[in-house]
Amino acid sequence: MICRREVTVILELNKNFIEYSIWFSLSFKSEESCWISLLGQAVVIQLLDCIFRGVAQVMFVNNPLSGLLVVAGLFVQNPWWALNGLLGTLVSTGSAILLGQSREAISMGLHGYNGTLVGILMAVFSAKGSWYWWLLLPNVFTSMLCPVVSSALSSLASKWDLPVFTLPFNILVCLHIAATGAAHPYFPEVDIQPKSNLHPSNDSIQSLSISQLFLSVPVGVGQVYGCDSPWTGGLILLALLLCSPTICFHAMLGSAAGIFTGFALAAPHRDIYSGLWGYNSALSCIAIGGVFYVLTWQTHLLAIICALFSAYMTSATSKLMSVLALPACTWPFCLSTLIFLLISSEIPAICRLPLPVVSYPEENRRYRRQLKASEKAQHSQQSGSQEEAPLKESGGPNVQLVVGL
Figure: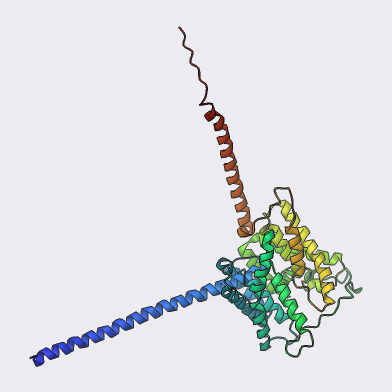
């Protein structure tokens, strides 16, 4: 028989055991939820990192802080445009993840920058103005297609070791504008008229504004994102300077080259002031001036020539595409830069880098120096082994000892 005292002790032990079990279970669940929370935070941080890198990759910059500065500049210009750009970047990045694209390319923002431009420019060319929420539907659909078009074009361009640049953005935005047009009941676009009068007679040297001319350099850089605010252009240049001073310098140089070409072709002053002659040239000058070529004085001159050629291409392309009621977008940059990347030269200083090793201009120069040093060491090692080979074949040096008697 069990006495009452023993029953009381057993009940007390069971009570303590149950309380300890409940505490252990709650502690385990708290630790598990903590790990889930940390994992969720890590995913969110990584996704934000990809988004900001994607925004910055429009200017060939792989830096989330630079992307954050660019986003700040977009909000200064127009919060609705910035929201559409971030949404396009997010959807394009998510679509690339679902399609199983390269994780390294996704983490570098290479599957986000076309979505950035698609989202912003769809808002820019919309005739409904700001905060037309139905525009998010075609924005999401078109941005979702960016990795599809990019992957398809990469399969072709990889045969020549060429990048796809912003060709997916150009294709998808022009398709959307051509499919909807100015008279669409739900998604009307800005009516683009044919440019028949490209040389207005009222523009002259006397009517030139020096202050607006200087401001058109950062405005031209800002027009890469469709923005005409000098403050936005200044923040973008600051973002480039934070990452690479060489890229920042070539962006300003290319924009200035586009302005010079605009004056040479007697373009309307309002187009020059609004940066429409600078953005394609800025992108071309950056791409050739140290990103895809190792920066030397020869490739620096080549970058300036490419920027001038891109401005000429801008004039011709915008006039031809306006007949179809389509914008020029960045077609001139893509066409002119791809032509210059296909140059074959026997000059060692004009060295185009393989796509897998393309980085910042400063890093590209460091890579080239290391490559030269390794080639020099390998060459000296081969020459040394070639000198040792005849000695081994003859059984060593022929030494004769003469003993005097």
